[in-house]
Amino acid sequence: MRHGHVLLLALAVAVAIGAVMTGCGKQSASNEILIGEYGSLTGTTADFGITTKNGIDLAVEEINNAGGVLGKKIRLIIQDDRSDPAEAKTAVTKLVMQDRVAAVLGEVASTRSMAAAPVCQQAGVPMITPSSTNPAVTKRGDYIFRVCFIDDFQGTICAKFAAETLGLKRAAIIKDVKNDYSVGLAKSFTDSFSKLGGQIVGEVSYSEGDTDFSSQITAIRGTKPQIIFVPGYYQEVDLIARKARQLGIKVPLLGGDGWDSSTLIPNSGGALEGSYFSNHYDAAMGGPEVKKFIAAYRKKFGSDPNALAALGYDAMHIMARAIERAGSTDGAKIRDAIAATKNFPGITGSITIDKDRNAVKPGVILQIKGNKFQYVTTVRP
Ligand code: PHE
Image 1: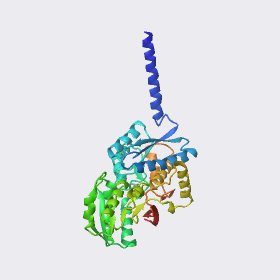
Image 2: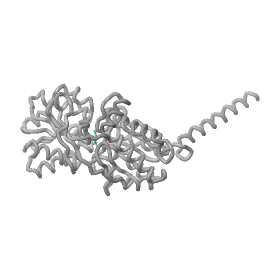
Image 3: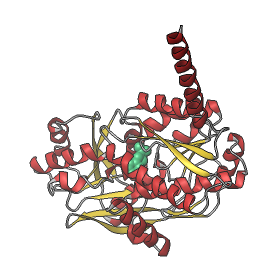
Image 4: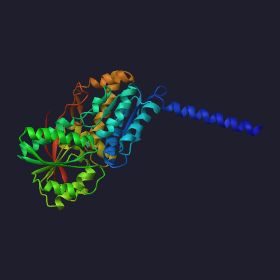
């Protein structure tokens, strides 16, 4: 009998604790505003996810130190999608259905943003991707935004740089067919380079995770390109570059923002020296705001911020400002406030959200020189 009472009591306590714990996670019961973030903290593109998260964390710290939003603190709830599109969808489903976040930040990779965006759209929870550049991402619906330029622009600035600045006529392309970003950027580059009088002399493919590029590079070598466009992610770009040099190709490689990782140069063993890529941000762009951001980032993380960190930081600040202006955590109101973002002074440039929920912004061209990313030029839309 007595034993039974103890058991019942234990059960009641457990239920009560359970209720309190779930209650804490709920938007309504909280004096915090919950923002979900999904990203590749592990897996093939972990560097993307980690540096983005760093930028977002820094912004949250600043926002909360300055009193928060609507009188409440921002609390980030983070989900690792392990660099996998299906996991990205699961991660966002958890954030939206279980944690009931007011809004979502993520992903970096376009393929993963596209996999998860419909979950936000259907639930009426606004999502801002800091850095997914494929045009299709924000076409997933009117709750889906980005604070970066799109690949129509990125492909064009790469093509112009090759054709006009470098004066080249023959380009080859190596693209990742499993990656929407890579396929889209290859197409945009092809369209622009052809319009500028250039010719795509060869085009070959690989799939994320491949490690042997011999046959593709051999095929490309035969087409005698003056430059090779490689719109992929860093972990394959270094292998492609090494193989190209090994097989005697001396021309520069050219790529997009997917090259941005501090591991790229060390892993390429010098094979990328002289090559170029387009990106969203460089420290050299900066005025006083950028210098302040770099100093704060260094202090917190002990390294220099890349473009991903800067975009994550900008995305979080834009989100916080939008919630403040919305005056509530209602999804539709936050959506309208994000859509109305104009001339936001971001680290990655002035950010205005256009009618297609994209940001119209300048890009930069960088060169790998002396084992460093060196600023070459800024290109305005
Ligand atoms: N733009 C890439 C994509 O859409 C992601 C990326 C952005 C990678 C910035 C590196 C730096 O997939």
